Image (cartoon, rainbow over all chains, first blue to last red; front, top):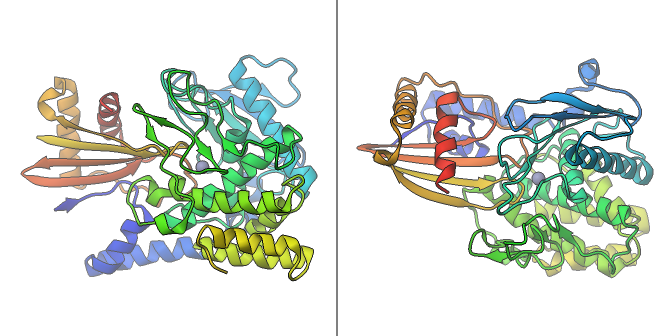
Length: 342
Length: 94
Ligand SMILES: [Zn+2]
């Protein structure tokens, strides 16, 4: 079998490192160790801050790709502009602003890099493009195909999810594959959900704990894209299948699609967060949100998995609220309930 | 020849796949496919750097069965124009 890869996913690198020719093995090991060494781009880029658009305060820029796939596209809106030229621009601008405010007010963080990095977003990317992503330096949103998905700017938690990928890049820099990738996705869902709850001023018992609510058109049987409360129940429709998220480690197995199931197994950690948040009560961003933020910022490494996350969140809760505090016990119990023992 | 195509990942993490026979392709698409396979064979297509900072992008897997087999895994920000146009076509079949 002749194999040729354009982007080499880490699991393939690992495979080459184990089974390839001598020359291939050396190259693969070199690539793996380079990415392992870089804990976060914050450290890598510390001396290159002049290359980033830094303003020191909230600064947003919106581009329009006009249904093409070139980034960033045409500049259509900048910070302080009163009137948005389109609903896509208005949502991307407002929701990235709320996310910036959330990180600033709740955690004292100044933007994605904590140094005031400008928030760049491109809307109307691609033709009938049903997705949103973070490309390493900016957020990108499609309009949706109108048949299954609606526009990806319409959900504040999706915007906060994408922006949080930027934060993770600068901090733990979790490798986007298998369990470290699922942990990366989990972090984006957690802060996506927290920004939504903060925006709506909701306590844990009033929150819906859904990710991307209302993203499916009315033709699809689905409330949202994911559920932290009940992973696996967000949608069920012949056109998109059934929500594949499990809520317990017993259902984890190594797979090749979706970078090893990063959007699938995130459900397990998402559910642990939900259980602990409900147990602790109040506004989730005040206590457990802080535990998760400090864990992401200071404790996790690129290859951390759920077990590491459980241990670190438990430790941080001990530091913040005391050993054997109700918060610390709630976190331990929640991880244990999803099959992750500390 | 038979082409098995799978798209996974993206924000929603939904996996779709299809099987297409190259006879179903238009002459333009067949040309893209031939050029693409030739580039793969001649190793003319560059390996882009390791995927990093491409969260929520679609992941594509293409398996071409043509006597010998070709398997390609790529993501949407890491592909050359021949592959892009082939994937554009395959996506309409999902
Ligand atoms: Zn994501």
